[in-house]
Image (cartoon, rainbow, N blue to C red):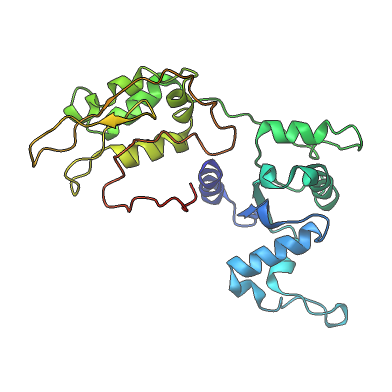
Length: 270
């Protein structure tokens, strides 16, 4: 999500003769089988079929190249490369070395990764791996608890409205190391939470946010009242260790799927 925001900002600020920012996902790249520039060109052709057309300035004696390859050769593309940590760990050092070999230090590039995966690639003792050429590291910090709470309540109708007050028990956990606090520490986690749990005019009532994963029972209410906040029993066992992947931990709300969405089956992937 943050790379998409960066992409939009770079496009808005791009000068007429500047490179065009393009988002790439490294998940499909195998650096042991494909050179980076060849893989980037294939991704451009797949996403923008018009770039398969021959480049008009290609010299006939050098062989015809298409627009995708010509844009890369003339550095008219600014790659925003996501998913370095989604590559198999055995390929991290190889991929980082391939990036350094293929892209000179003055070639603009943005590489997104979990910090741990990037550090582990540099710390490999059996190979010498250099950091990304000329790169400055930017580490995103968790959102402040007060800003996160304001965002959730504002989207629900503003402070002290009935819909916003539904977030009070959740807001108490923001900024903590609890499962809820970690799940809602990123813009993506907050966006997903407010999309699922904040009511909309075309929905009778959105499910209320909950703090636990355990069995819950909803107090009886007479139609057509919207669903009320479930009462949840506190688990006696320690909560599970928060997920360490890029996706925020999912706080499940037993018995309360999002209105209008099918209930997942056991074979569904999260």
